[in-house]
Amino acid sequence: MFSSSTSHVPRDTALKCAMAAAFTLVGCATPIDSTRPTIDLPAQWREASPGSSVLQRDWWQGFQSAELAQLIDAAQAGSPTLAIAAERVQQAEILVRSAGATLFPSVSVGGGTGAQRSDPSGASARTSKSTNVSLGVSYEVDLWGRLAAGVQGAQASLAASRYDLETARLSLTTGVANAYFQVLALRMRLVIARENLAIAERVFKIVDSRYRNGAASALDVSRQRITVMTQRATLEPLEVQERQTVTALAVLLGRTPQTLQVEIRSFDGFAIPEVGAALPSELLVRRPDLASAEAQLAGADADVAGARAALLPSLSLSASAGLASASLLSFANPATSLGLTASLVQTLFDGGRLRNQVALSESARRQLVENYRASIYTALKEVEDALGNAVRHRGQEQAQLAIRDEAQRSLRLAELRYREGADDLTSVLDAQRTLFSSLDQLAQLRLARLTAALDLYKALGGGWAAV
Image 1 (spheres, rainbow, N blue to C red):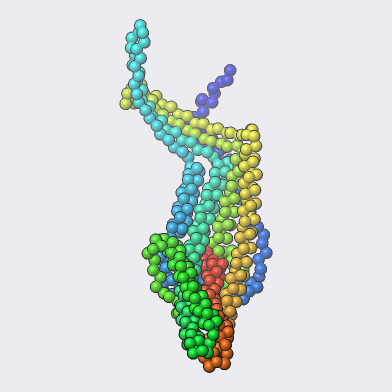
Image 2 (image 1 turned 90 degrees about the vertical axis):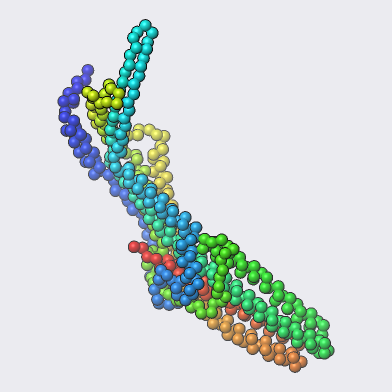
């Protein structure tokens, strides 16, 4: 038979001993390891930078288009995509607060009152009344850092969601600018197509006049009529594509597709700013998507630490106090109670569930390490490609301007010689095709230069920098 000698230990002394033991064990918590891949970054870029100026957060101002700036401001204020990413940040902040709450004690209070009457057969009726109130406190001591790992994992997820918001903002602004540039390029191509149609119709009048005067054949008339019909057929697809691109731009802005009006008709007055690419080593702190991948890796480290800590014993402390009375809604002559409990629990057998969770979290961390490595390689490639495209498209546009000027001169000479009977219609048709193609190609190269600039700004992180 066991003796109850411990009942003589004062309650406050027992509580102090239990809390001292708990805080001593807290110091044994295991630290959370950090995992980072080893990557040899290049010392410099292979492709030459088109400029030396530093990329700014409001990079779109460099295009010197007030309408583009207004559209980007409208998109940042009304885009559903951006609002969704912002809500994910709010959810992550709530999860951090929820995870942090596990580090604090849980306090509960309860009370009740009631009366009960029993009337047994052959005995007098009895009535019992009671009133009670209780206070309970429970606390899990984070011996091995499992709860702290959960908090750090939630904080890493919050950081990743904030970086994802910046990535979404960068994708939105470059997407709006790209759609806007496509609208203007299509409008320029429409103007060129109408001008080409007017040229074809002018030449048709010359051919028809020569045919009526017996200086041209019916075949010449038919061939030039085909040219006119071909040029007229190019208008409708461009018009449809222009309308559809405007509606796509409206969706990016968070507006109904039928309400958006784009006023500017061409790239006249636009500038193409040229920025420097800095060093490859700086790219890791200038791209929010890379920062997000690194934050996810930190969260995986915390998940591994938490899974490992779950294999170790858990210590819980609880205390309770209460008052009880044999009266209804009264505490006359109450009975008091006070309790203190410390419990240590160690899982002996769970079919390998906890160890499999550790293995799963370690595998997920290795996956994120490779994901982070792949993201860095992709980012380096995107910058190299964007640098090369920016320089190449600038040279191609200059060359295409010379081709256009020469094609215009060639068509004038071909028309003159055909009118004078020195050449047949074939030279005129060839000159027309060359001019039509060069003009359309010139508009597409201007769009390519603008798109290459956007690609470079996006690859460099849009002027964002880790704080």
